[in-house]
Image (cartoon, rainbow, N blue to C red; front, top):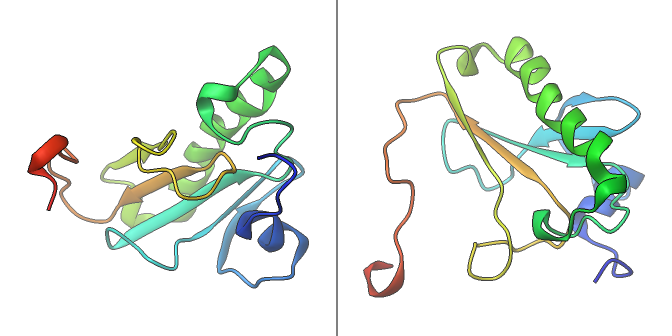
Amino acid sequence: MDAEVTIFDKIVSGQIKANIVYQDDLCLAFHDVNPQAPVHILLIPKQRNGLTQLSKAQEHNKEVLGHLLLTVTKIVELVDELKKGFRVVINDGENGGQSVWHLHLHIIGGEQLTWPPGSSGSQNK
């Protein structure tokens, strides 16, 4: 799956415009076009390097994985609505709700979030 160009690759390359919140040499954060909360930001590595999903991570991905989590704190500093709290979600695989095969973190907040965040089996609507 790593060879297929994803919508996120097109955002990184500038082929598709995005409302960018933050970027550096390793990652890019932008507002989700289909937000699930008042604030819904996607954070992606600029280079997949095999990271189509978290379960595919290998030793050589360790630096970028740590960098992504530390970058969340920078994004929270930039987006006031996240300062009262937020959730970081990584969907992995088909049953995990992953729809783009490029690792991405959902940073969700701007309101009181409920728990549990999802359901399973026949409880799905």
